[in-house]
Image 1 (cartoon, rainbow, N blue to C red):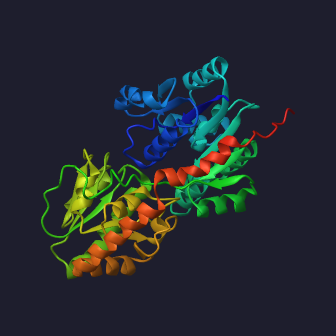
Image 2: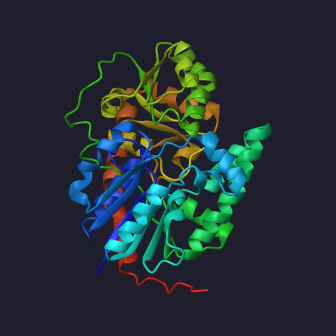
Image 3: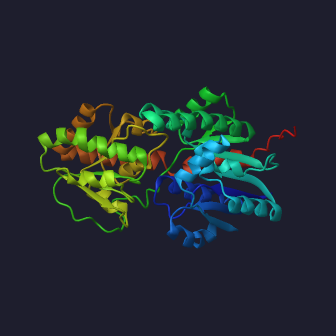
Length: 400
């Protein structure tokens, strides 16, 4: 029985943002089955020093600095007739690292985390290939195109079209294509006709995200609404902007003292500017998001564009906080009614207002939400779906 090569678009440590959280727990789970070799990119200088933290889960670890900017990647994409998503992650050092591992170790499984990394597969892999798309990125870019105008709309539409073709070709070579929710998997099957499509949902560590755990508490008085996320990520920027400009004013009519905290690293200038609005604060990066979640009267997730399972929703639920989510943010989560969901400005504002007006009902909803994630979303239970994929014999690969 051979080893696993784990290819990741971003080093899965520390597990402090959505893609890193999923990547870390999958890597950790795979390490209980076989020896795992990690090859990943880093786009934060601090991450170059963190690969040692993964030593107990891995054999070899290669972390390659990704310095290519979007402008250079865009020019390369246009010149090479490739998706920008691929040229942005194209790296000769990483390609060399993959060839080196495959030459020196008996690898029988290649786990590809995010479609950008599929370009590093051998042309005709002899290994079992597990392609973790997570979400259907081409659909995300198609949505961006519809919401944009001019050259940006054209570029997003081009990316959606070319990336969709690429996703289909990758799935044809993979022994299994993984998505984070059944909605994403169904969309992929519909648009590509792909077979061997498997759902592996995200989980949540309810021992870490526990209101009774030890963490630094946030000193907060009064009603507090909290949004958490990477704040240079377009869907998060759109979500908080929409909330501040159109939803929060309705809530403040009934609860004029309510405050809204935007909690997350790398806020853009547009996000920072929201702090000029009444009752809005932008924290930037925090050491531990749990303190803010614990202080929240309501956790909000008003995303207009959301694919798969939103960790921010699971984290709020696990911390026993009442959560109000947009229909898009709640779509992939089997919450059994323990999350309040709204599709419009009025529905979201009304749901938040009602919970602020009835703290007892809000507390009961939060407790029910925590019980739901404990029952439904433990990582071990969610990742057990990987076991049959690791046991399945690789498909014979075409030689033509």
